[in-house]
Image (cartoon, rainbow, N blue to C red; front, side, top):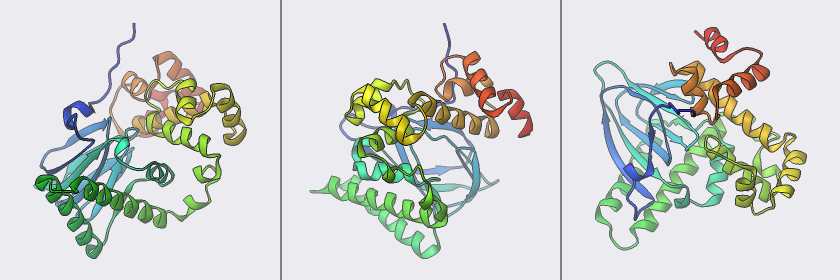
Length: 283
């Protein structure tokens, strides 16, 4: 019997009401927020304060104007500077709350973090405040306005990230180059790869039979379904090893692998060193 040790995963049931797929918070952070991830999506806008935000192992300054997004496949950590209080709007939502086209956009444009200039930051703050007010007042049509404002935040972030990394446009694995059904399956995989994810489940989500989906996947992506899924998990594990103090066992299960021996074997086959050996090279 295997026991799963992982960092904290914030669950839908603890942060979202059963009747609503969306919620907004205004947080004041004075202490370190340890590495964690969520079942839900989260987009946050920094109002004031300073510190360091580490998203999927990549650290950057956290100051007013930073807008960042986490999908259920991402992990992050926040460390305020000494004596600083980080204030931010934190919007969390389920996958079902936004249009599928936006899920594709989120998948295609990574990383999901961008520091906006003061004028743009003021506009984003106004937009977040409108969402906050609409949530509290719950007037007629408030849910429509909230959804539209949230979608604008996501699009602004995706556009900004895309402009800052123009090489993404030439990526041959970009989802718009694939068959729509296959693209739908890939988007789902990128958001859920740490969960138990069978070929049949993803094929069903894509609207195809498992056999046909597997055949199309191998032809268009260039890897088998299982190999692609394994690569997603290995890449995630590699980021955890480099940027956290999690044990090898914790990294194994957090990345979606079922046993430590299997994880260590495929990691070594792919990166030509053991997980512990790789971590030592990052020290």
